[in-house]
Amino acid sequence: MTRPVYHDFERVEDVPARFDIVEIKLDGIYCEMLIDKNGKVKMKNRHGEVFEERFIGRWPKGLGAVVLVGEYMAGTTRSAQSKDHGSVICFDVLAVFGQDVRDEKLSYRRDALERLFRYLESTGGRYAWLTMGKQDKREAAGVFWNFRVLRGSAEGLVFKSSRGYWGDDWARVKKRVTVDYVLIRTERTKNGRTTLVGGVYKGGRLCEVARVHTRVPVGLNAPQGTVFEASGNQLFQSGALRHPRFERIRTDKNADECRMNGVK
Image (cartoon, rainbow, N blue to C red; front, side, top):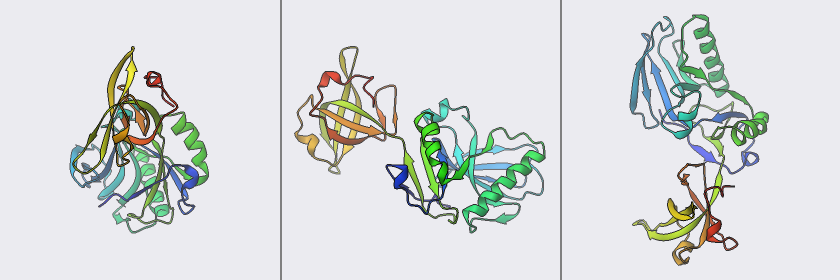
C-alpha cells in the first residue's frame, strides 16, 4: 500500500473545492497498522517497512484482520512534546469486520472507522494508545487553522474528498515561519544547487545555525554579511528551520538585527 500523494498549497483558500473534508495535520510517523485476529500488530512506515511490532491483549474475537492508517506520534520534536506521544492516531481504515474497504469511498471508510472505535469501547478493553483522529467538513477549516495551527501545536491541515477512494490525492496546508539569517558563506553542491549557510547573533556573537538549499543563483553573488530570509515549517531552539526554503535577499535589514528572537 502506498500513501496517497499530497498537493501543497500556501493558503487554506487555495485548496480546490472538491476537497470537502478537513483533518488536523499531525507531525509524527505515517503508519499503516496491521492487526491480526489474535491482536498481533505490525506497524509499517510510508515505505512499507515494518518498524515496530506489538501485541494487544484482549483483542476482541470476531473482528478479523484490521488495517488502520494513522500517525504514530513519535520521531519528531512536536510529537515528543505532545500529550499523545507514543500513541497512534487513526484517520482511515482499509480492512475491518472481515471486509476489505480500501475500494470504498472515504465517507464509507470513515463510518467504518467510527463503528470500529465504538465497538472497541463497548468491549471494555483498554486501548489508550490507539485513538481516532478528528475529522470535519471543510467549513471548519478556518477554526482549525486559527486555534489548532496558529495558536496551537498542529503542523497544518489536510484536505480530502469524501467521495475519494484510497490512493486518491490529498491536499495540505502547513504553517510556515520565517527567519532572517546573516549569510556566512555559500556552497555549491554536485547537483548544481546552492547552499546558503546562515547565522544569527546570540549574545553578540554570530553563530552558524542554518543551511538553506536553493536553485536560485542569487546567493552566489551576495557578499558575506548579506541578510536573507528563509521560511520553514518549524523553528528549532538552535535557530535552524525545519524544511527550510529560500525566500529573498533582505536589502532593507542590517546583519546585527538578525537575532534569535527575530522570528515572524
